[in-house]
Length: 288
Image (cartoon, rainbow, N blue to C red):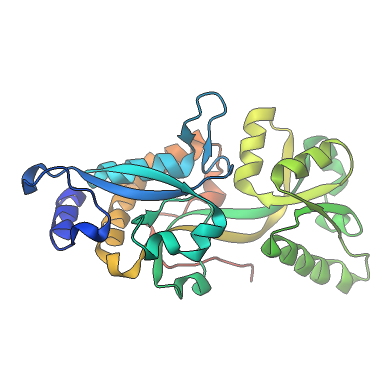
């Protein structure tokens, strides 16, 4: 049975207020629209507005559009700030059906808000530096005592670096990593090019996007500090919607579309792929 048929059955049991727009009263000819939220800030290559066309683009956007097509629906996109999304108000009020955002980490704490996550991509966080500086860091412990740019607003990133420095540098009697605050990956890249820091930490997505634009200027160092799992959040009462979209995502993985989209947006398949099937509420994976 196709995902399209499954979704028709799902919708037949939902009131109109559940967030789907009904275009006709005839069940056979229903025009289904999924109201999907995205982050209105710049987060390439997962989601961002193309500076030339002004259109919403990115891996998460392409993927969700393909998933919606599989279930016979169109997508009505609306932008929200990250702070608004993490309050889950757009879902709780029924303004949107799902977050199709590229930067919402699936965590147990967030699931306590009455939502589930359809997990769709990993974004590992790495130390990275200019490719021209790679020889300095053949051994990763060469980072001990060096200036490393991290996003100051991200407690996750600063915490990962603190933990790595404690386990790698402090225990070996070496100086700790010196963290230098930045507003985000774009400023980190600028600080590297200006020589203000020796290395930085960011998700593999922004690093890959910067390399696409700048001709492989940057190189990741060592193994990932974590494997951050991003998910599409939906209300628990819309379990059927989540399951229908999960089936659509699994079909896109099986037919190769998923990997092609990773490659299109410069995301490394080995580090970003979720594997042969998707999952719901799998959560982040941290180093052992």
